[in-house]
Image 1 (tube, helix red, strand yellow):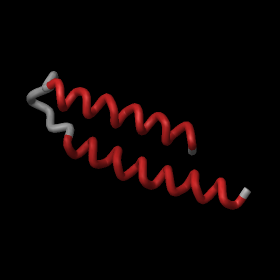
Image 2 (spheres, one colour):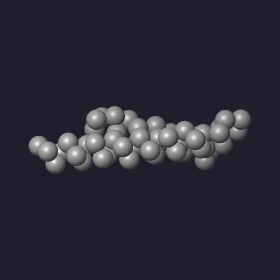
Image 3 (cartoon, one colour):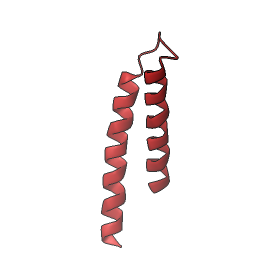
Length: 54
């Protein structure tokens, strides 16, 4: 789960970079960024919960 969280954070970074650089003007990456943020929150909660139980 920790690896998935790191990968999701990297994806979030690249999506924001694409949005901010306006490389793909015809693609709305906003919903993808929101999905990444939701996944980051879920994965972070899972990792924290798993660490508490160990």
